Image 1 (cartoon, one colour):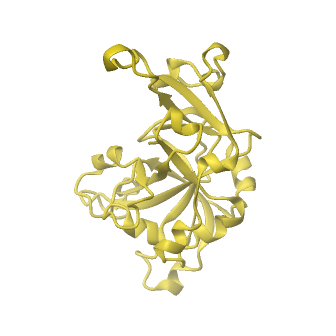
Image 2 (tube, one colour; image 1 turned 45 degrees about the vertical axis):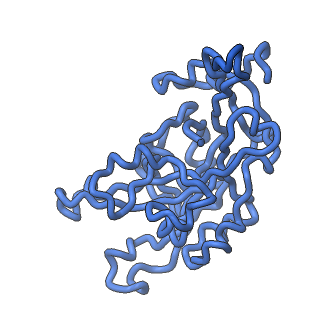
Amino acid sequence: MCGRYASARKKHELLEEFQVAVDGAPEEELRPDYNVAPTKKVYAVLTRPLKDPEAAKDAEAAGEPVRQLRILRWGLVPSWAKDPSVGSRMINARVETVAEKPSFRRAFARRRCLLPADGYYEWYAGEDGPAGAKAKRKQPYYIHPADDSVLALAGLYEFWRDRTLPADDPAAWWATCTIITTSAQDELGRIHDRMPMVVARDRWADWLDPGRTDPEEARGLLMPAGAAGLAHHPVSPEVGNVRNNGPELIEPLADRLL
């Protein structure tokens, strides 16, 4: 799974990097976060009409889809969910089943997004000891592009309505997201058996296009993060506590290389 990542770039950098046409949260900017955890607010790049099509009378009233930078909550809550707390269990969507699973299939068809990341964390369990005993403590690793470029993690987003609040109350709508994962490859597979999927820059427009609804076509736009030229190194166990946050979390522990 992908349960923690780092996203420390400033909003203006992401607006430029992803060629965003509209800042969807002009009055809010997230602080650099070196320990992004489930249920936190995150930046997401998506393409949709500026006016919610569900609220507009017709497609023309909603307008043409526009690439936007939005702030979403990590942990997807399906529109039909009775309780938004289910989002904490839906931080990842497996690529093997994303097109069929009820929680994700509608979003996979029409609500795909990119989640900008500088890198992500996985925990290495180590080799089994005598009599199959497990390692006492897992070692966290930071996995990131070797050239320090941005990772465009493949994601999905959804909207959930709190029916206990009036529709015009901003708190009545939750915008949430999930990260698509796949089996880990090569050296990264020794650290953890799952890894996030990414979308190459030349496929961003196709991935974000809500008009592309064929599941197999969408799946063909993805690639494992390992194919993007990643580097990895062990980091401090401090990253395991979500209260810890800062650039020191991604610094390498040179004496604990895998």
